Length: 112
Length: 114
Image 1 (cartoon, chains in turn orange, red):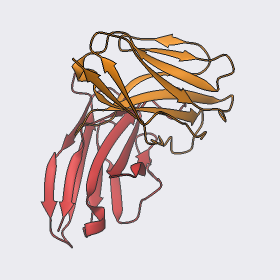
Image 2 (cartoon, one colour):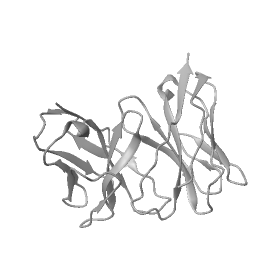
Image 3 (tube, chains in turn green, yellow):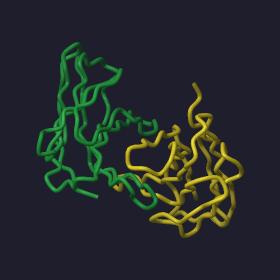
């Protein structure tokens, strides 16, 4: 699976949009971009994923650049409960074992 | 909306004791997984079950066994616990094995082995 690079930490004001970047310059054509988050003491929570097109769900939006070498997760109106570590993961379409490889992630702190 | 349920949430064992971690999902998913998470190591796959009746080794299977009891339940057994197995254990499930099928996680079992 391709390696990802994320900022170690970010701050965001409550109510503002949080934009979390991820670089995956070695991504292959059959690899998906996934975002998970982990709130302290809880299991990883699936947020969103995409292959080529931008995606939106009730939690967030995923913007993937045309060359697919980077992406941005957008939380449109961050709340204090969005404080967590956010992981960007790329995964092949047919990964034997379907293992998710979590890197260091971005620690997002939402402040009042 | 239970999703993936793990029991117990916490457990303390002595070296050499055995125990089984339980996992159940109510999403009618075909595939299930067991991971462990150690500080600074990220998640590592222990075993997975692509579908009912099948199990396969992941990245770190030594010292563990699994049973896919039925479509809903996937258990992880430590036959003779060792301090190196102190960790947080997460169970996950997904519709299938395809790359576009996300895994959904339980809240974990925190296991300490003395």
